[in-house]
Image (tube, rainbow, N blue to C red; front, side, top):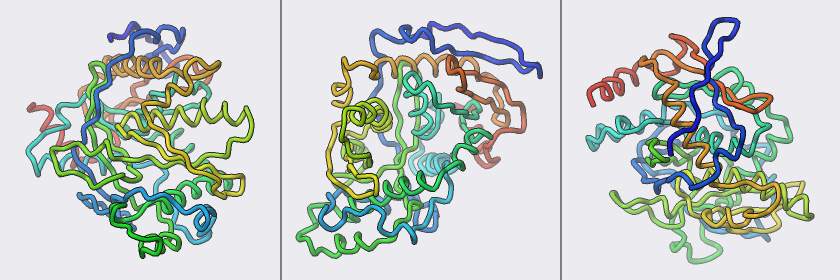
Length: 382
């Protein structure tokens, strides 16, 4: 689907050129849904407890439901857990993984992509038509995104209550997973089930998938942390994303307002997050205000839009995908300076009616020189 929007320009007081992409009228994104291909994993990598990067699957864990009678307290271990080192993940590991894959297989995957980033960035874009009160800001070159002052400030502005609720999510992941396939668990006194009750929560430990897909005419590569898998990962070239599982916590639904909030906001972001990387199942742990698990419920990612379809004030997946498709096509026409050492700032802010793009100049790129020499040479020759 080609973008119906032109490239609107204006000048700031500093004489920087500003490009604008309008969200209104929202009806412009209705209609036949843009094509989104099934994501295919290119490679994967792991971070260990010391945040050391490994080009393997050592941190892939498997889903095994928690015992609510013994593992319901999500606050357990909060005083001793190891916080995540970086609230925002630098793109370095994603580029390292792509370079390692290139060396190992000879496949120059990055040269076939139009946009390369983390899933979280694509999730922000996909949800923008229905989260029009949440500002965001990104930095980008022709092939990279990086932190800006606003994005770093948002990452650091975490209240004690928010920090505690983030821990509940990490704790839920710990008590829902084991380090071996679930069919190898033979009894409730299996050592891995016992150990996870006492395990120190360390969100620096991660398993990440790197996948390629296409939205409309825009080819994407994204990296994404994967919580766990339902089954043993098949060898290449088989695609493992169909076994991945997303784990989430949410407040217990007690009244109509809770139901609306869950469907309007929580399900939107969880659907987008899982749909983008091809994760077919989301497991929700519903907890009370003090972090005690009350119930577990599974959702199929592709069935979530049916839950909200036709309800007042809800979101529409077709509008999300059409918006993202048109925006990314437009962005590729705006970010045109062919220099990996320069960057643009992409802003969505009050009054939340348009996305602005400004050229930030040379010398602002977050791309390390090693990546420029590796990938820029690859892309210039392809």
